[in-house]
Amino acid sequence: MNWILAKVPLDLSLIDHSFKALAYLDPGSGSYLLQLLIGGLLGGLIVIKASWGKIKSYFQRSSSDEEEENDSDK
Image (cartoon, rainbow, N blue to C red; front, side, top):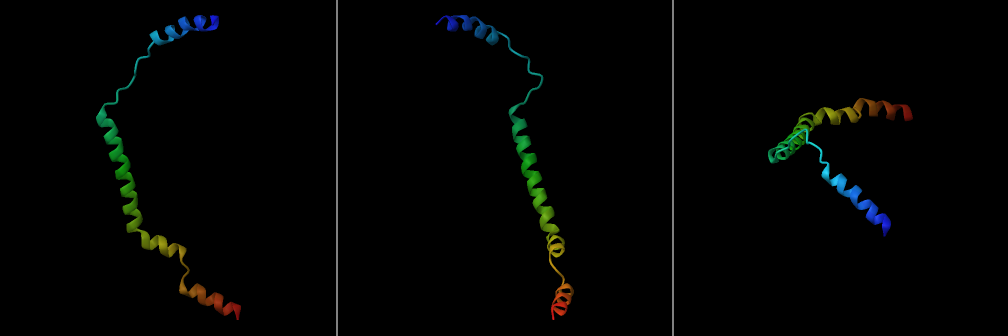
């Protein structure tokens, strides 16, 4: 019980000391950050959609490569 009474003044002294906020975020800041996030995601999807053919052809084998592999197997 004595340790609780000894702790109370310490806790009350911590409550009294508040820190100054060095920045202010108004409610519009959150919606602006959300718009940036959504815009960035949609922009990235549009870039991927526009260049999907190049991405797809990079990972596919050409038909001449497949013919060479079939000829070497025989």
